[in-house]
Every structure is written in C-alpha cells, then in structure tokens.
Amino acid sequence: MADTILQVRDLVMHFPIGGGFFGEPTDVVRAVDDISFDVLRGETFGVVGESGSGKTTLGRCIMQILNPTDGSITFHAKSKAPVELVGCEKKQLRDIWQDMRMVFQDPQSSLNPRLRVIDLVGQCLRKAEGLTGQALADRVSVLLEQVGLRKEFLLRFPNAFSGGQRQRLGIARALATQPELIIADEAVSALDVSIQAQTLNLLQDLQEAFDLTYIFIAHDIAVVEHFCDRIAVMYLGQVVELSTTYELFRDPKHPYTRALLDAVPIPDPRARRGKRATAVVSDGTVAKTGCRFASRCPHATDLCRNTKPPRKRINGTDVLCHFAGAI
Image (cartoon, one colour):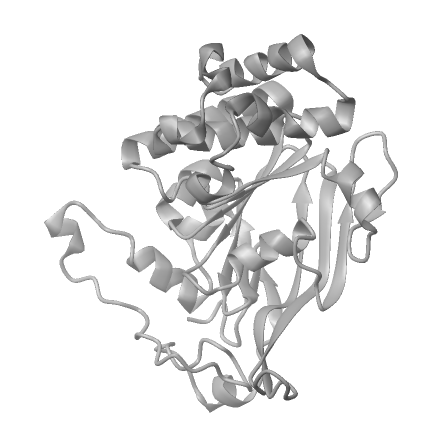
C-alpha cells in the first residue's frame, strides 16, 4: 500500500466579517471547517465542489499562503523527517516549497508580465540552487521541452503566449525544483476544452515521469472523474463525501454528490428524459445548526435541520449525512 505524503487533521479556516473598520467582527465565514484527510504518495487526489465551497482556501492553507485558524497539516517528503506546516517559520517554508508547489487557476495573473520566461521559470532556481547565466538557461530550456514548449521561447514575455501555453509555463515553473507534491488549483478551468485535454494529458505524463503526487482542485466533476484516483466532495467548507472515483460515481452516498452528478450535461436527449434535479437552488443562507445542506436536500428532516450529522464510513466511503446508506 502506498505511503502517506500529506496528512490534514481538523483543519479550520475562518474569516472574520462585519464590525466596520474599527469595530470588532460580528461573525465569521467558515471557509474550511474541521476537515481531515490523507493524500497517498503517487496518487491524484481530487477536491471538487461548487464555487464558494472552500476548495481554493483549502489549497492555500496547505501551501501556507493562508495561516489556518486551527488544525494540523503534516508533510512527509522522501528521505526527510515529517514537517508540521501550520506555524512554520518563513525560512523553513521556503525549503518545504521546493518539495511542494502550486499551479494557479489563472495563468494570466499568476505570471508577472514584466518578466521573460527565463526569469519566470528560473527565479526559484536562482534562489534554491544559485544557477545563473548559461547553466540557468540550459535548465529552463529542459523544463520548457518537458511541458511541450520550445527553448526558443526563453526570452519572450507572457503576453506572447496563448492561455494554454501560459498554463504550461506555470507547470514548468512548478516543476523547476523537482517537487514531490503539486497542488493544481482549477488548472484547466480557464482553458478551451481541447486545450484542457492536452493539459490533463501533460500532467499525467509528468506524473509518471517524475513520480508526482497531485491535489487536483476543480469544480467540473466530469474532468475530475477522468483524472483522479480519489475524490473529496466539498460543500460550504466541509468534506461531505470522500471516496475512490469508481465508488463515488457508481454509488454516491451524499445527496449533494448526487446533485453534482445530476448536473453534468448529458449529450443524448433520450438519456436526459425523465431526469430530475435532486437538490433545490440555495437561498444564500448558511445554517448555523444541523446539516449545512439541509435547506437544499430533498430528504431533509427536522433531525437534519437541528442536529449536526455524524461522519459515517460505508463501503470505504466517508460521508457526512444522517441517512447515508438509507436513501
């Protein structure tokens, strides 16, 4: 069995709101609320959910771009002692970030338009390994070729590239320090469908070539189905279901997961006939008691609205629902 590369335990990230400029906060946004999971070395771990579910916040907490309110994140790099990321000093984080990198959603905004490719991709190599001059150019050229770009692009600026090429630059930058774990935050959502497929194929090829582990954050569950080994489904800051991809699509246990699957477009009109939505549209409110999905769930009872659901394990699936396995 594969060993664990990342352990997340009881992770919480709350953002205070209200109170004005000088006043005390009146409430908090529970962007990430008591989340626990393990990521296995060599797998692609998917995180899926609609906008506002807390997916990006979770990724940024793991990278320590955001400091979590509470909880623990332990990173297990090869041939190194396990490191607790929460509370790490900046100097130690810089060393950890060589083994753990992130590919951001929008390549247009994540790439500095004033820097040439050799500086964009090679910046971390200068700091981590002290490479300069021809040695740096050679190393960046190899990285460009690994992501399907020509070495002649070294002196170009980001605005000379298409969206798909910019995302490849972002992937090359993430690969520069030979990491073990890459967090891809909506890495293909801004791309055309054909470019999405090319980028996903590239990520798979790189995973095999460099023994990478991915945390793949997305809102498109159809993309996640074809790319991930296991999937965590998030809703309003909580993981409501965590399962293997096969089991999740074969037999979803949580009503929200079923609603996500029912929302996937079906090209054949005959196959669509008779299908009905399994959840209502949210009214924008967040319940402070009970199940957070209760206001949209067709199976909700007073128990759901008043009592926090327990986490159950059914056939290898972790699910947050009072009636999981019975509906």
